[in-house]
Image (cartoon, rainbow, N blue to C red; front, side, top):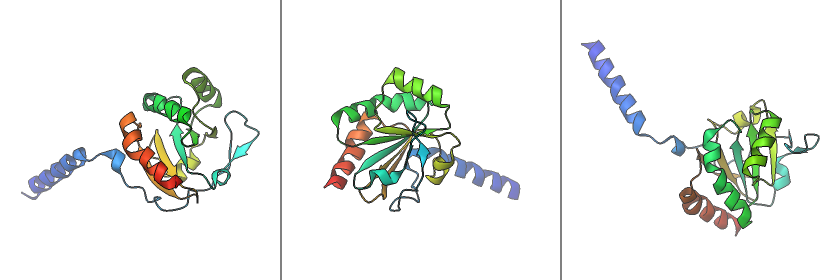
Length: 170
């Protein structure tokens, strides 16, 4: 009898879990300073960049990889955003060979002000990355204000990110 009750409870929990949206998992980093890093730039590996270089600006950190199918799905949204000039976008290339990442950007367009290479995935861990793509909105003081998990759709950009970016830029 106890075994049957335990089995029913487990199935119930799994059923509830299937209704949850992984893109809405709250990040413990919201409202906290963006984790510091110093990583080589993708285009210029002898130069490093850090979030400190973006201090005073609202900006996006987009975690992406050339091997990520969903990254290709969201990429045109970032290309369009970059053309608008609304906000700088920094790419965090995640666990990717530099050659593959550069070729992918050459083929699909480069919306990033700059991309840094997190080839070991250590910075991704600091940011609590579950998988790629993920995007963070970071304010002028370097505080993470929003995290979007999964590929950004045009609707999500229009309805969630752009209004937040405009509010933070005031």
